Image (cartoon, rainbow, N blue to C red; front, side):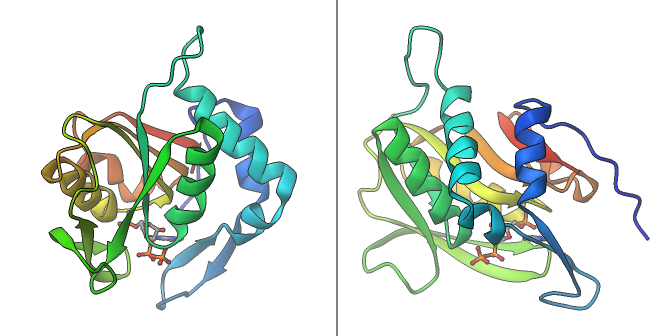
Length: 190
Ligand SMILES: O=P(O)(O)OC[C@H]1O[C@H](OP(=O)(O)OP(=O)(O)O)[C@H](O)[C@@H]1O
Ligand SMILES: Nc1ncnc2[nH]cnc12
């Protein structure tokens, strides 16, 4: 069995503890051998969800209140929950990067592997103004396939990725190795 080593995460031990308290481990989902991290309890707890979203916005806000991003991207489906809340709290817009076949006006597609399968992600025509600063958010960083594909799509669509944030990073799957030179931010790392 993999030994789980807990680290505090980039926003400090209090935020890491909040995230940790909202995650349930489910063995053998969606396939045998996968330890699935279910963050739906975190989303369902209003105070925790609020604190976690505020913590992300604060991380990208400097001392005089200036935001480091112009828009937020969420990755289907769990990333949508986080992205919409971050965008609302920061008073910016939100862009959905979707699984194949869901968008009516596809500009770019990217096929990728994730921990338990393969998929294709797509971004809409006109999703970004050229040079727009983009924060990409998701719930989990595992192997990094989803993140690598999403960041590539954002850049092909004209956005400038200023950061990638997740609530939980499974460091033993080494997702950061797929994201060299990227600013990766995890609230809780195991
Ligand atoms: O780092 P990786 O190995 O690529 O895995 C991380 C991705 O896997 C999950 O999404 P999933 O595709 O299961 O979609 P869902 O949100 O629709 O459940 C998760 O929300 C991340 O997007
Ligand atoms: N183990 C895991 N738990 C939850 N989401 C995931 N996405 C990829 N791997 C995952």
